[in-house]
Amino acid sequence: MKRIIKKVAVLGSGVMGSRIACHFANIGVQVLLLDIVPKEPTPEEQAKKITTDSKQFRNRIVNSSLQAAVASNPSPLYRKSDAHLIQTGNFEDNMKDIATADWIIEVVVENLKIKKLVYDQVEQFRKPGTLITSNTSGIPIHLMAQERSEDFRKHFCGTHFFNPPRYLKLLEIIPTPDTDQAVVDFLMHYGDLYLGKTTVLAKDSPAFIANRVGIYGIMQTLKAMEKTGLTIDEVDRITGPIVGRPKSATFRTLDVVGLDTTINVANGLYQAGEQDESRDLFQIPGYVQQMAEKKWLGDKTGQGFYKKT
Ligand code: NAD
Image (cartoon, rainbow, N blue to C red; front, side):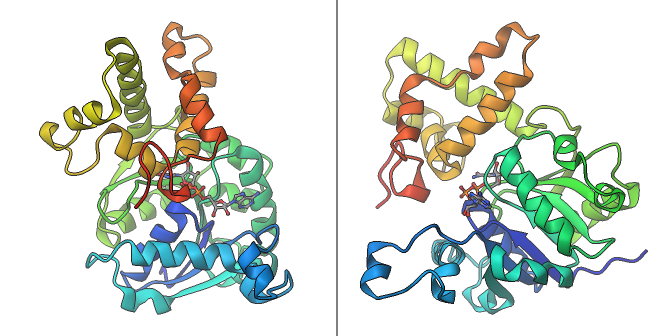
């Protein structure tokens, strides 16, 4: 079957979803970018008498994320002029519109239960044969495919983009034993040729390839920092450009990625390492947990290890 990707549905418009949407728009592909309906109006919305049944309210999350992605990425890869290719909406009103997509990419929060709830909705509206992939950083792909229809499982795969997708070329393709080989071949070809990526075929192993190595490095750095008493600034100075990383060092990277996402991936590696003596390395230090509890998640909440200016 010859596949043509004219429209991609991106489910979840946070840090990654909004940027993946921009990336597709910049290669001329139409995008449907959806997210959940916010729980209640903000005080500003209340003052403006914006109610929960207005479209403006229901699409608030997705619109503000998209604006942030477009505004914060003024490089030639994220041309604002392509933003018109992105149609925004919310799961409640627009999930049915995924029937018009050639590829559905799930990019919601790193939580298996929530992802499964989203797939319940996807199964109601997805056209048979449509590609359905997850951008999970580390949840086992086969667990997400469990209990799905045969057509879903054949077209389901992990497609792990890296943050920010405009700079980071790696795209991990992670099939399950049920994924059609033609789907894997297509995604690798499309990633290399159209998305400008270097695709890598990864096994469905804990945190796949790059995050397994990356989180290992981050956790080792945190431990070494505790032992040596180095400051955040000092660690960033010696793990940044002077060792060949173009911009981001350890803590800058954590703020860009989001502490919640990092914690979820580390927890996944900890749980997966039951038989492994070195699993304690993946235990998140108390002060990082406390930051997450205070919603100091990084750039997305305005405060992480650094304050966003
Ligand atoms: P994020 O927190 O910025 O965005 C998550 C989105 O999920 C939000 O827009 C939110 O509204 C939505 N969401 C929250 N609760 C929901 C619910 N109950 N039902 C439906 N949607 C809900 O997270 P992110 O960083 O964009 O991560 C999204 C996915 O991409 C995760 O699986 C993550 O592991 C993966 N990922 C993240 C990065 C990164 O650097 N942040 C990199 C690669 C992959």
